[in-house]
Length: 319
Image (cartoon, rainbow, N blue to C red; front, side, top):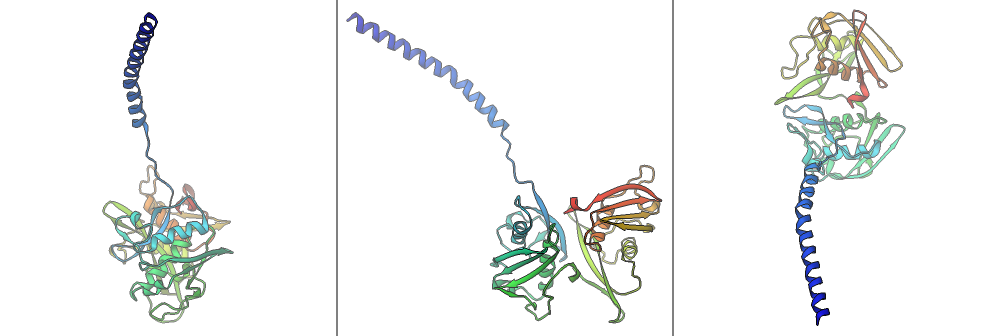
């Protein structure tokens, strides 16, 4: 009997100690859990890539969206998903922009060879409205050729090369940026027509972004670099809701292009602050993006003022 009572006391004491231990540990564990919870960092994919969507003014404009951690063909497919209305990436389209490819379109196949991307869409692509078809082609071309390693695009529908738009406009088999974008015509005849593309600044609320405009003119100069700089420095801008921050008196004295590096030598009016020798970011980007349309293998643009280097833009950091 005594033995049983001793065992019972030991069990009661042990149980009590265990209960006290649990009660003692629970607050500390909870505190530690709370601290760990406070330290949790919710991370999202911070990889973004260039995409050309339609803005509120109807321009095909340059912006960016989160993308997969992938390259070339896979990145191309991911970006095109962002061009499809109500597509898989519709929830991450930036405010002030919209997709352009008709809803219900799917990508049947995609391949890349010799820097030419071939993309095969389902038949719903041809349901594009006539007044939107040119914007759709521009959006596809400029989005895909913004990817390193993709210079040209072939568009197919159900396995057949898209040789005409739904309204009957002829299309080249192989498309590139020479197709133009947000086209503007200043022509007096059909002879000696030249084109060049300039980037302007637009704004949605407080967010600035860049809009390319391809201008068609009767050839007056073979020097596209100086023509573009002159156009960007013109005041007022011919499209009133597009802006260029380049001073009206800014002039390129001379320039040199060698192995991917473009050196532009300006007068002092390039600077936003002569004392600090600063150049506005908007000026750097509009010029850099415009020059990238001239030179296919452009890597850097160096800005000089009266032969003194002020800033160098890495084109790859813009993509």
